Image (tube, rainbow, N blue to C red; front, side, top):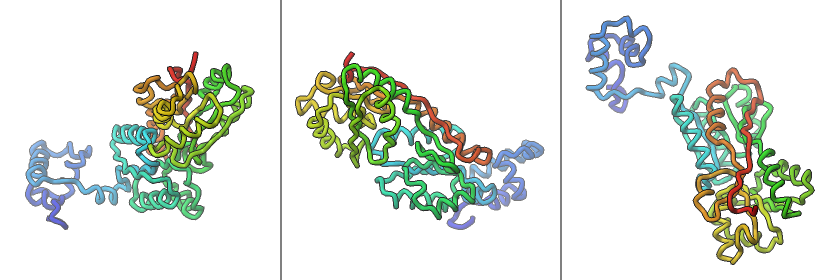
Amino acid sequence: MGRNNRVTLADIASRANVDISTVSLVLNHKARAKKLTAETRDRVFAVAKELNYRPSYMARALKTGKSGAFGMVVGDLRDPSYSMLAFHLITAAQARGYQVLTCPTPWGEEKELALLRLLHERNVDGVFFQPGSFRKDPEFYETLRQEKFPVVTYCTPDPVFATVGVNYEPGFRQAVADLARRHRKIGHICSPHTDSRPLTTVCKAAGVEPVEHRFRHIGLPDCADEVAEFVRTSGSGAFIVSGSATAVRLMSRLARKGIRVPDDVELVGVGNLEATEWVQPELSCIGYDVAAMMEKAVEMLIDYPNCEPGRSFMTPSEYIVRQSTRP
């Protein structure tokens, strides 16, 4: 037995009466193992099963330079938008034989960067970094650049590292065109990190005044009452809410205040979460294909050595009309 009573290749080789290289060929399903007799291969597998052998991924990583795992630094997973990102990234990675070490954060830059450093030190094969603080530590950023360490960011284009994101312009343009038929002001409820330029540009082109209000804990349950009070007192009759989890919670809070959706206030969420169809009225939203975006993120991490610097993939968006906006 090896360290910590772990079964080693040497233990299997001794019991099966073969050398260690033979055990390695068989258990790693190498092509050269086919040159061995079927009896030898079967004996190695039988001994490995008998001894309850489990491969050492650390040893494999040292030998191959690959850990078989990606890291993911993501926002608060109580927000379903980020839970959905994590789910689809993990699904795409596992379909390609990788696991994902998921590191949620409470939106603190120090913790976000500390987790990125930790994943880098653990020699994962790459990191999907969702928060917007990626370049806040120039020295560490330069280290990652020089090492050509695979990093894919989310909605934060970078000249060196890869990015996946959403092209919100088509969805915003369609939503604003609809709302502008009834409103001259459109409220935008978002987080301090949201890039509001796409919506602002679309509103101005449509002759609509965008009224932006940012909330620190957007997407979390404890923010819904604050957002509802803002909507009640704002004087605006239409709002685009980033993201849809906040919009869904907002609808119930407004109902308690006697404000009807869509009769008194029209709401459009950003993100086509399943919950948008569970509520009444069903939530109109800006939808986009999260699964396809996370598939591309994993492909970029795997193919990173062949990627051009600053490579990006933007999934298109569309306006999905349901019942929280008027005809």
